[in-house]
Amino acid sequence: MLACTIAVVAGCKSHPLGPYVSPRVIGQVLAADTGQPLQNALVMRGPRSTSNSFGAPPKGAEQMMMKSPAHTDVEGKFSLASERVLSVFRSSGWSELALSVEKSGYRLFETNRPISDATTSSKGDLLLDLGQLFLQPELREGQ
Image (cartoon, rainbow, N blue to C red; front, side):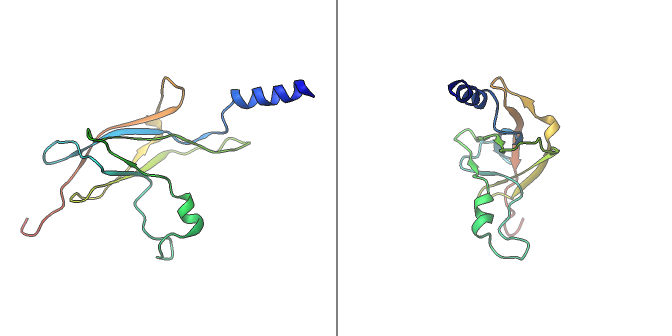
């Protein structure tokens, strides 16, 4: 019985919980007009969504499913942790990552990046380096 328990515990430590559903995402957000880093820009997986398919704000489980965003640091850099799911079977896979970046005074930036661009980091997790992302200033009246 003890040997069986040890084997189960050892097995849990040697295998990840399940397949990746999203790689770790890193990058830097800059102002397109000045090239300066933008601190406290909000970076999140998926498109910016303020409503569900019925036009109402997200509620209950919809809010629980929303992923935590990241904020850029003083150098404009951000990092979103990789995500795994608990699964007995491997998923069929995914091919792209949707990302949105927003900052007051700048236009919303949304992009889709192919997951095939992800590499394996030295820690063994998937890593998608987006490099530099440039936000355009909002247009003001008279421009």
